[in-house]
Image (cartoon, rainbow, N blue to C red; front, side, top):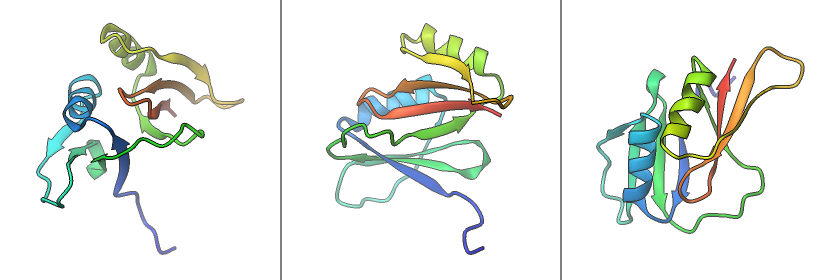
Length: 117
């Protein structure tokens, strides 16, 4: 196997400052230093060393693409999101497994999944 882990996911956003507020203050990711690439963006850390990179750009149409974040307690996570005014669908079982998932959108409409294995 060539790939051993996931390093980061890039998400297009139309307003980096607004997106950083959502990902940091609502989801709890931690802002990181980011080199100047000549276009606006931001990097945020997720526990375990993974990162979310936000890129100022047009947001593609929702064709089912999404980023899934693992959570320890999906009920607590969903309650917290709803307290922040975020519309969350679920949690619901993942097929016939013991896993549960919930879906929400960031301020630009990017689909996000919360997953409790």
